[in-house]
Amino acid sequence: MSRMSRKLRKWVSETLELPQDILFDLPRLTLIGSRQLYVENHRGVMDFTPDRLVLALAQGKLRVSGHNLVITSILPDQVSVEGQITDIQMEGTEEGS
Image 1 (cartoon, one colour):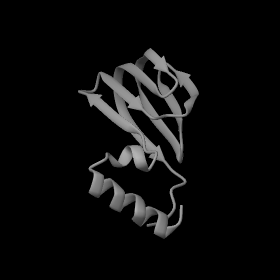
Image 2 (cartoon, rainbow, N blue to C red):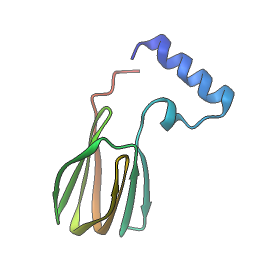
Image 3 (cartoon, rainbow, N blue to C red):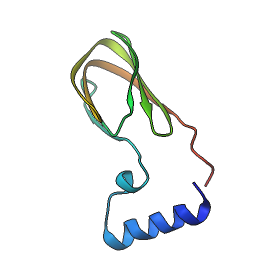
């Protein structure tokens, strides 16, 4: 994404009071304690075991580590995970600011 495009999207976001996750195609994470995680705006499950979940994002990957992980709900752009969540990492191909 070009620098001008990022500035324009930021201005539109601020002017119209739109969430940046919509304009910049970013994931929205909701963590409830260390037991439940909701991820919106993902691009699919890349890998899943009871100890690890890897989701594709528009720009990179989201890695969730834990114990006894279970996918409780999965939709085309939303996933819910329960279990003992110990670590969340985003690995991106995001361009520099």
